[in-house]
Length: 291
Length: 205
Image (tube, rainbow over the protein chains, first blue to last red):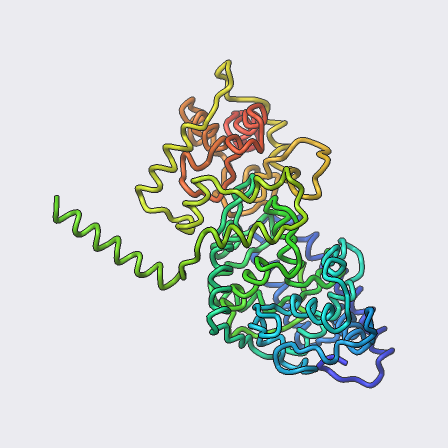
């Protein structure tokens, strides 16, 4: 069960499904309205969506991403892989099996792997070391296409993240190796490359900008990083699935006209560490709800 | 003169102390290695995308705010890259330009084999026409751009130059160097110039 416990699980699922449809309808209306009205109305649209997000916060069961949180919880304790064991002994940084609050302290340095890991990279590691999966198989096609259901991996990631919902980002990132990774992420954030000269900073280096009608967070600014980073993993209405942070980065690199970054690569961990450092103290509300 | 140099050195040292604080130094080779390592299954013909030219390197290192000497060097280098059509005509068909401005197609890893020509995706960042309300704001609004400049020949050339190589005008601009990086052809750039600079284009209505 997610952080909100309820007894009638089946009734709740139906309830969520109905509400999910309503949300999709409501957001579709929002999107349509936004397109039809002049872009000066964009601020009003943003405010309406923000109000909507607030309503979701007040009634957490209305977020369809929570179905994946529940699924992830079941998967977490289900034996899997060549070794036929569950992930219940996976050490996410607070000791084997401790899930509560673990996400709030990631990324961090793990002595057993001798590297800094974010949530998903650590999950990969546990699936390899505990369950016996092959790394190459796990990273081959890790993200669902648009409209496809959230993959098991994403469901487990959002389950773990949800177990820190309501907490604040508190990754220390103060060990030498952690500082190195944050600095690397900073440099990568500003690194321009590819046929369009794009860097992360091209779209996320200023306040109040948009691409088409999509607002863009200024991710080097702590206030905006805190607001945004805590909403990932997020349920995306346009693709009807939970999108994890590693998946989010993969999609950014697609836009940047770069190839597909591998899940768990040093680059991805460094960018996430940099973003989480910028978001330090921000509240986690995962899964968030996105366009 | 000696005084000026001393002051400049102080200012330089001062600003660097600040950037060292904000931005811990990372070896560029390490950054490059992390980028290459992140894409282990990349096809050979994509590998050039990891490599930065001098301009990319400098803009990255200065986080798009280059000191004047660097900015001047970028501008000079990028200006030299602009190529013009043999017949000297810089204005194409604004209707084709509008299609290009709407299209973000091209060069993404899902765009192969290519199904159509690369787009310019201008609306992603610029307002251009009243009819298109879904426009971005990373770049300035270009509504009425040609009209307020009286459709002058000098401004028409400046627009061609900016689209061909934005950094010839604005070092470390966020805008792609469409011509210099072979994202768009000269004919496509002419169509975009027409969209911005033709009196009959919706940009100027």
